[in-house]
Image (tube, rainbow, N blue to C red; front, side, top):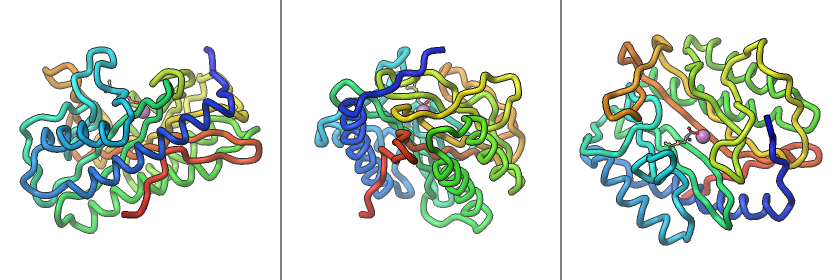
Length: 253
Ligand code: MF3
Ligand code: CO
C-alpha cells in the first residue's frame, strides 16, 4: 500500500478543481427534473466540464464511457447515462470526477426528482449525516477505521445497510489511490493513521433493503439485488495540520 502525501501545491490544485466540480454538481442538480433522461444530464455535464475548464476524470477510466455516473433508484453506482427517463418521486445520484492541473477530485450527490415521500427524504439525509459526521472526525492522528465506524453506525442505526463491496478511496494523483475508505469496520484491514497531506474520497453507499448487489449486462451498472433504493454521497477531503478541508464544497445557488 502506498498512500500519496500531497504537497501544498497539489492540494491547491485539487481545491480549485474540486471547487469547479462542486459548481458543476450544483448546476446538474438544478437541471434534474421529471421527464429528462440521464443522457440529457450527461450532455449538460459535458458542456459544464468545458465551461469550467476541467476534465471529466471518469470518461475513459478503465473504459468507462461517460463523464457521469447517474444511478436512479435501485441503481447503486457506475450507472451509465442512457435513455432512462426520470420520473416524479425517483431519486438519482450524480457522481463525477474532475481533473485540474493533473489532479483528481471526486464527488457525488443524491437528490430527489420532483416530490418524494418523507421516508425517502430521510433515506437520503442519513447518507449526508454519515458523510458530515465522518468528515468532522478527519484530522491527523485519527485511525481511518474511526471514519468507517461512524459511517456504518449512522447508516445501520437508521435501519439501512452499507454496501460493503463499494468503498471510498484515496484520490488525487490518480482517481483511485490507496487506501480503501470502507463504509463499515473490517477488523482485518490494515491500521491507517490519518496524516496531513492525505486526500480521500469519502463516500457512504447504502441501501434501504438488502445490501446484496449485482452488475447489469452493460458490465458497469451496479444495482441492488432486491430492487430496493440505494444512495451515495461523496466529498473529497484533505487532511490539514489540525483538521481537514472539504475540497469539493458545493455553492448555494
Ligand atoms: N466515484 C466512483 C468511484 O469512486 C468513480 C467511478 S469510476 C468510473 O468508484 F469507472 F465509473 F468512472
Ligand atoms: Co469515488
